Image 1 (cartoon, each protein chain N blue to C red):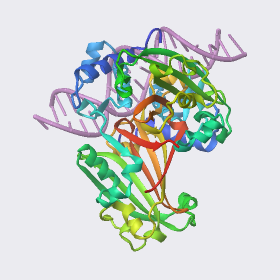
Image 2: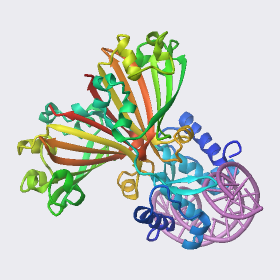
Image 3: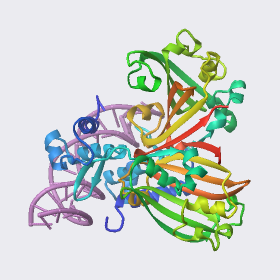
Image 4: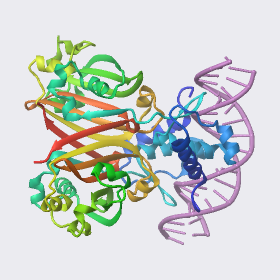
Length: 246
Length: 246
DNA sequence: GAGTGGTCTAGACCACTGA
DNA sequence: CAGTGGTCTAGACCACTCC
């Protein structure tokens, strides 16, 4: 690294061009073209492209080309408000509320299954062998996947209720919990960041890059009624939390 | 990618070994050793190591070796509580509170300067040419840098006050704002994730990997008195937010 | 100096996509 | 089919760290 590594120089040049001259969806020159232009080996070119990919600037598509990423920013509403009762009563689940506020068309697909609580036993205060209901969802904004949410609830609560169906009905799972007498009284969210694994990469249609991981724990009194693990591309998501000072 | 790419296989094997047999600080075999063991080329070995590095599992140190990363270090207290007045009155700035709660020894270094508000003019409701006071801090846990915080305040408020000194005194900047009649009444935090740039990599002593970015906006009534941009390694930090349901 | 990781090259074959 | 990116090899030189 005498002055700056060649691959970083190249990444810098490309990054500047993307920001100033290209727009979302534009194709970058192919690797052979970049090799000719920068007079560098293919590995070096690819190292530069990999950096841009990890930053979320570009997407590399096998057999097609390298494309400038759409800005794709989903701003999640303030966490307090988006889970408020008043929103639920307007039939808005949290994600639908985000969509309405920002004018994208939401859609989602759901899979539901049951499995032993295992690692989640402790947090729910049940036995590891007791079953939990797992609701695995992919949320989409204008058709593009923007969030994976895996929600777990003790089956003791969900058994025989709409919570075990694919469509939980208006207001979403939290509204159903309320109907059952397990209305959430307190929420806690734990936020961290990680690199996307293969699974998330595929599901979120992203090619590497950082991931935001939010674990939301919903309490009903002193018992945990839902643990929701949400993963979204870090470069395209903003979470908002607000509170009044004491 | 017939079944699984060789570099992914190797990464999987190493990941499993790290999780099951090695502990934080242990050294991995050197690249030549891994080449011999897996009978793969150096590029392939390095591709596997790069994945582990991006996941935050290992740190690569030039001229020394590859080492297993220490596990998650810092859990930030619930945001509401860590900024509470009662904590400030115990002389605890937010970060010191995190430290006390988790038993690490905190330290920090500060640089202070002034510059035109520019992009921050709008949020503060001042002119772009008006100056802001910038407080740039590096927070350390047991000597290791864990957070970069760049705080901006309108100079109109800070001029001639301890806020322009390196040491703001007990309770930190928020306590001084309160003394000046600009006590925060509301906070908002906007959370996103991104890849670490060169600057952050150096400052945080991390070799790539995702970064958590938290922008905290402090309001005093209807005016913004502080904008604090905090960056921490995503793999080593957890933010916590809690609130009561309505 | 010996050993480590960081960068780079030149070339090869494979897998995917679209015309 | 031709063109794209994905993977892999074998070898080279450099920069850093420790002895």
